[in-house]
Length: 261
Image (cartoon, rainbow, N blue to C red; front, side):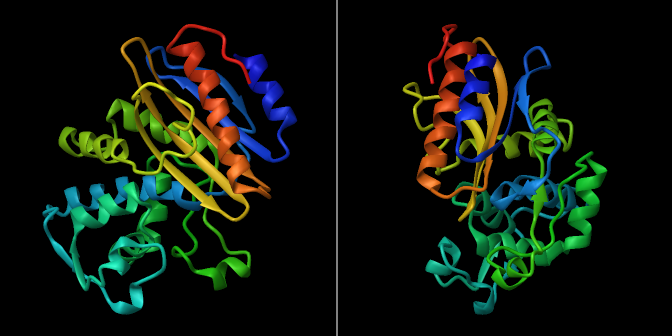
């Protein structure tokens, strides 16, 4: 498996960061550019989800608490904006932020707790390279080189702690896994998997990056996998490569046969 993955990474026209971690045995099976930080795109919404649930828990808030949404908050590619919602529950905002990567929901949640709280929480749970420096769809700050960052190492660490349910109390820990498992975007890690695989994951993409990271649950093994592409020129090609890498790993770990690139 490692040799096939290494060959695919070397032949990729794009910059690849990845990890595969056997969660059943707690063994890092393979990695590439583990510690190099890159533009996080929407995968940063996973630590935001956990930080918000920690905030809700700590402050004894209800998930049914309603937050106001200003029309100024509406951004493109958002089911919140499509519905012209002017309020929403914390629960709905958290779910939409993950399962459709809703940017309006994300920005309302960022405003609720503040970037400083989020960045402090990221450091508190052991994320070394993950930093939130702009809201979603803030193209002006992005044009100035101000971006949200993470690393494969941080995502491997985060998803291990999610799997072990170490970050929140049991009900909220399970809620995180449930929401990630309801993801509606399946054009990368799940792309070429024939079986109906349980995958708790989050994608992220910009014009020059494509990411997908999550936990694969099976009857024989649970593992986390993250593939992060930077310097992307063709997003569709990048998502296909993530899918091919994922299939090689799944074939080896779950089906017990050597995958082919």
